[in-house]
Amino acid sequence: MNEPKYNYDELRNVVTTFREAIVIACKNRDFDRKDRMSNFPGGCCDDACDLLSYYLYDEFGIRTRQGNGLYDDGVFENRTNHAWLVMDDGTVIDITGTQFRFCAGFTEEVYIGQENAFYKGLQRKTVFENYDIRQSERLWNDYLIIRGCL
Image 1 (cartoon, rainbow, N blue to C red):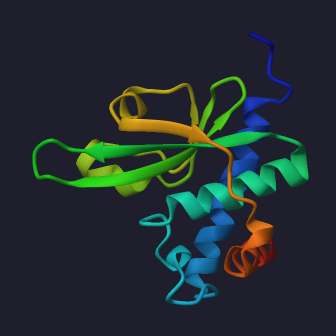
Image 2 (cartoon, helix red, strand yellow):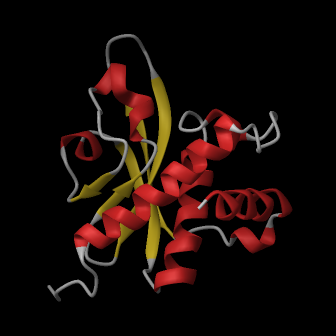
Protein backbone atom coordinates (compact mmCIF):
# COMPACT_ATOMS: atom_id res chain seq x y z
CA MET A 1 0.00 0.00 0.00
CA ASN A 2 1.33 3.45 -0.89
CA GLU A 3 1.94 5.99 1.84
CA PRO A 4 -0.75 8.69 1.95
CA LYS A 5 0.17 12.06 0.47
CA TYR A 6 -1.36 13.92 3.39
CA ASN A 7 -0.79 14.31 7.08
CA TYR A 8 -3.54 12.79 9.24
CA ASP A 9 -3.40 15.69 11.72
CA GLU A 10 -3.80 18.20 8.92
CA LEU A 11 -6.61 16.13 7.40
CA ARG A 12 -8.38 16.00 10.78
CA ASN A 13 -8.06 19.78 11.13
CA VAL A 14 -9.48 20.38 7.64
CA VAL A 15 -12.39 17.98 8.14
CA THR A 16 -13.14 19.26 11.65
CA THR A 17 -13.14 22.85 10.42
CA PHE A 18 -15.58 21.93 7.63
CA ARG A 19 -17.86 20.15 10.11
CA GLU A 20 -17.75 23.12 12.48
CA ALA A 21 -18.74 25.40 9.59
CA ILE A 22 -21.82 23.23 9.02
CA VAL A 23 -22.69 23.46 12.72
CA ILE A 24 -22.30 27.26 12.62
CA ALA A 25 -24.55 27.46 9.55
CA CYS A 26 -27.17 25.38 11.38
CA LYS A 27 -26.97 27.55 14.50
CA ASN A 28 -27.30 30.66 12.33
CA ARG A 29 -30.25 29.02 10.54
CA ASP A 30 -28.54 29.68 7.22
CA PHE A 31 -29.94 26.51 5.65
CA ASP A 32 -33.57 26.55 4.56
CA ARG A 33 -35.55 24.72 7.24
CA LYS A 34 -36.80 22.27 4.58
CA ASP A 35 -33.21 21.45 3.59
CA ARG A 36 -31.93 18.21 5.10
CA MET A 37 -28.69 19.98 6.10
CA SER A 38 -30.70 22.05 8.61
CA ASN A 39 -30.95 18.88 10.75
CA PHE A 40 -27.22 18.10 10.67
CA PRO A 41 -25.94 15.54 11.52
CA GLY A 42 -29.17 13.55 11.38
CA GLY A 43 -30.69 12.47 8.11
CA CYS A 44 -28.20 14.23 5.84
CA CYS A 45 -25.13 12.00 5.83
CA ASP A 46 -25.19 11.53 2.05
CA ASP A 47 -25.45 15.28 1.40
CA ALA A 48 -22.76 15.99 3.99
CA CYS A 49 -20.50 13.44 2.26
CA ASP A 50 -21.05 14.99 -1.15
CA LEU A 51 -20.32 18.48 0.21
CA LEU A 52 -17.22 17.44 2.14
CA SER A 53 -15.94 15.33 -0.74
CA TYR A 54 -16.19 18.26 -3.13
CA TYR A 55 -14.37 20.50 -0.65
CA LEU A 56 -11.57 17.98 -0.04
CA TYR A 57 -10.99 17.46 -3.75
CA ASP A 58 -11.43 21.06 -4.90
CA GLU A 59 -9.28 22.59 -2.16
CA PHE A 60 -6.74 19.87 -1.38
CA GLY A 61 -6.82 17.35 -4.23
CA ILE A 62 -7.97 14.59 -1.84
CA ARG A 63 -10.09 12.07 -3.71
CA THR A 64 -12.80 10.17 -1.86
CA ARG A 65 -15.73 7.97 -2.71
CA GLN A 66 -18.92 7.46 -0.73
CA GLY A 67 -19.51 4.41 1.40
CA ASN A 68 -23.10 3.50 2.15
CA GLY A 69 -24.58 0.83 4.35
CA LEU A 70 -27.62 -0.14 6.36
CA TYR A 71 -27.53 0.20 10.13
CA ASP A 72 -29.77 -2.26 11.95
CA ASP A 73 -29.61 -2.34 15.72
CA GLY A 74 -31.22 -5.78 15.75
CA VAL A 75 -33.18 -4.92 18.89
CA PHE A 76 -35.63 -2.06 18.36
CA GLU A 77 -35.92 -2.48 14.60
CA ASN A 78 -34.03 0.76 14.17
CA ARG A 79 -32.91 0.60 10.54
CA THR A 80 -31.43 3.45 8.58
CA ASN A 81 -28.91 4.04 5.84
CA HIS A 82 -25.63 5.69 6.64
CA ALA A 83 -23.06 7.30 4.36
CA TRP A 84 -19.39 8.15 4.92
CA LEU A 85 -16.34 8.90 2.81
CA VAL A 86 -13.66 6.39 1.84
CA MET A 87 -10.21 7.49 0.67
CA ASP A 88 -8.20 5.57 -1.92
CA ASP A 89 -6.17 3.90 0.85
CA GLY A 90 -9.33 2.73 2.67
CA THR A 91 -9.32 5.47 5.30
CA VAL A 92 -12.83 6.29 6.52
CA ILE A 93 -13.91 9.92 7.03
CA ASP A 94 -17.23 10.41 8.80
CA ILE A 95 -18.67 13.70 10.05
CA THR A 96 -22.21 12.47 10.79
CA GLY A 97 -21.61 9.34 12.86
CA THR A 98 -22.82 11.02 16.04
CA GLN A 99 -26.39 10.50 14.87
CA PHE A 100 -25.76 6.91 16.05
CA ARG A 101 -24.50 8.04 19.46
CA PHE A 102 -27.24 6.43 21.51
CA CYS A 103 -27.96 3.32 19.50
CA ALA A 104 -24.44 2.34 18.42
CA GLY A 105 -22.17 4.13 20.88
CA PHE A 106 -20.63 6.37 18.20
CA THR A 107 -19.09 9.29 20.08
CA GLU A 108 -16.61 10.99 17.76
CA GLU A 109 -17.83 14.08 15.92
CA VAL A 110 -15.15 13.45 13.31
CA TYR A 111 -13.98 9.93 12.68
CA ILE A 112 -10.90 9.42 10.54
CA GLY A 113 -9.38 5.97 10.55
CA GLN A 114 -9.70 2.45 9.32
CA GLU A 115 -13.02 0.68 9.12
CA ASN A 116 -13.95 -0.11 12.72
CA ALA A 117 -16.62 -2.38 14.22
CA PHE A 118 -19.40 0.14 13.48
CA TYR A 119 -18.70 0.15 9.73
CA LYS A 120 -17.95 -3.57 9.63
CA GLY A 121 -21.36 -4.21 11.21
CA LEU A 122 -23.31 -2.33 8.55
CA GLN A 123 -25.28 -4.39 6.08
CA ARG A 124 -25.49 -4.07 2.28
CA LYS A 125 -22.36 -1.94 2.06
CA THR A 126 -21.44 -0.33 -1.23
CA VAL A 127 -18.87 2.25 -2.30
CA PHE A 128 -19.52 4.55 -5.22
CA GLU A 129 -18.54 7.91 -6.68
CA ASN A 130 -19.77 11.02 -4.92
CA TYR A 131 -22.44 13.12 -6.51
CA ASP A 132 -21.19 16.26 -8.28
CA ILE A 133 -22.75 19.01 -6.18
CA ARG A 134 -22.43 21.45 -9.06
CA GLN A 135 -25.33 19.55 -10.68
CA SER A 136 -27.73 20.51 -7.87
CA GLU A 137 -28.69 24.08 -7.11
CA ARG A 138 -29.64 23.09 -3.53
CA LEU A 139 -26.34 21.35 -2.79
CA TRP A 140 -24.32 24.10 -4.46
CA ASN A 141 -26.13 26.70 -2.33
CA ASP A 142 -25.46 24.60 0.78
CA TYR A 143 -21.78 24.46 -0.18
CA LEU A 144 -21.62 28.25 -0.55
CA ILE A 145 -23.28 28.65 2.85
CA ILE A 146 -20.73 26.33 4.45
CA ARG A 147 -17.84 28.09 2.70
CA GLY A 148 -19.12 31.36 4.11
CA CYS A 149 -18.81 29.93 7.63
CA LEU A 150 -15.24 28.63 7.24
